[in-house]
Length: 266
Image (tube, rainbow, N blue to C red):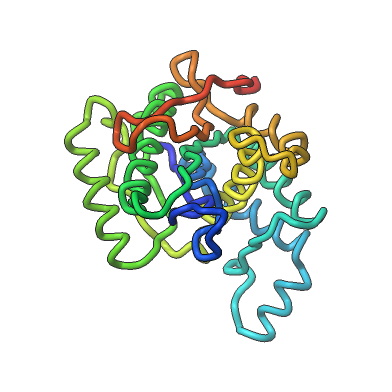
């Protein structure tokens, strides 16, 4: 069995760079790490070791100030050289465990009035489930489960209803995903924390790759080859890691995958 740990990247709300209330981030999607169930403990311990190595003082300060255990400390930045080295360490850990990445996201159209945050999130989740099903099939595993970061109770209920309906009505497309996604607090499972780290990398790289923002070219040089190498090659032509431009409508058939630049390393 495979496990897909998922977390958001970017921002699900409307995007308008001229409006201070709606210029959080031009991208939104879900980024995830796929590992064999037998490797989940290694991912957990490996991620904890990386946190101890790179954020020892912050972990100690959080423990003294809040009584929060080191397992629950979450690195949340990609701004310093240390943050970027930590992110590379996470990608190296995924490779060492034989893991893969799944990313499903898009660049949002500019505008507030027609933006549907719920439809966006549900569509992105459906795309991630399809990609995961294809990765399960390609790996030869029998099934897989999804563990994702939760949000609010209202948003989570709507997401679970949508995902469950999609899984049951499209078993020919996602029949290997064994269960409706399990939603958890991100400060507990290290797999979800690691997916959050990957999401920050994806968000920066694709502000260059998808939107052409020159200020993020350095991120593509530093992390782009890692994303290509750790993506799964689905059906010999499509990558499991892609972020599309908003050229088509939302929904289960509104996706436009980019061809993979790289191949899974042997």
